Length: 267
Image 1: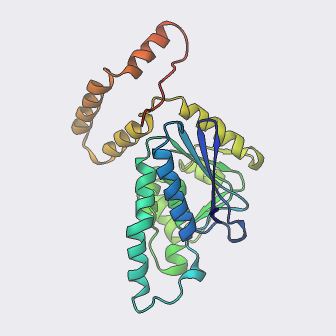
Image 2: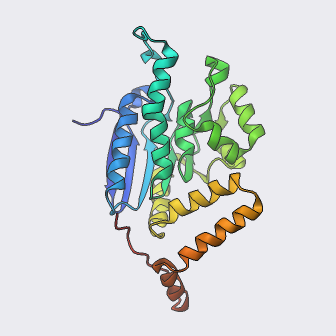
Image 3: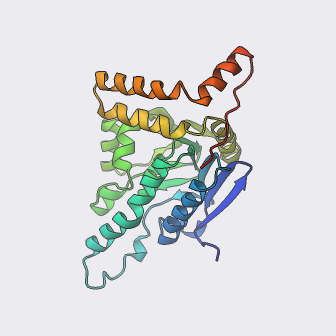
C-alpha cells in the first residue's frame, strides 16, 4: 500500500524521497518516519543507489510534529509516550541517515520548521529554494528544546550564538540568511530546486563508494579531538585509504588527464 506521507523514486543511480502530505505542509508523522526508515533500509541494500535526495512537495519541506495528534496519553504521561517513541523511531531515523553509506542532499522547498530543521540539516549537503525558511518554535511557542539532532547540527553549522538566538527569538531564518550563516550550500530559484539538487546528487554519486561515511566520520572526529589526536586520526585513515583501489584509480586518472571513474559499492 502506498504511504500517504512519502514517495520514493529512482532517477538513474539517484534515489529521490519526496514528502507528499502537502495539505499539512509535511508534518513529521508516524507515516513519514516509518516510511523514510523503510526507504533508508532499501537504499542500504541496493548498491545501485549512489546518492539520495530528500525534498518535499508544496509549501513545506517538513514542519515538525503534528500537534493535533498528541491526543490522550492513554494512562501514561504525554512526555513518557513521546520520549519512548523518539528513542524507538525518531532518533533511530537520524542515526540511520548519518550512518548511510551514500551522500544525502536535502532540497528545502519551503518551510523547514520544528523537527524538520533537524531532518534537513542531517543531510551532507543542503540546497534551498529562495522561498524556503528555517524556524525553531520549540521553546518560544511550546516550552520545549529543539530535537531531531537540531541542537547537534545547528551549532556546528551556524555557530553557538546564532543557534541559541534562533532557538529563543521565535524568528524565521530565510534561505538567504541560512546561506550566509553556513547552514546551506546554495540557494536557487524555486523552479530550479529539483534540477539543482539532482545535479549535485549526480556529482556526489560519482565519488568513491565510501566517500560520505569517511568524510562524515573525519569531521565528526575533528569536533571532539584535540589537534594532535586528529592528526593521528588523519594519518591512520590515509594508511588504509592509500592502499585502496580508489586511490590507484585517482592517480591513474590524473596521469592520463581524465576524470576518475570509481567502482560502484558492492553492498
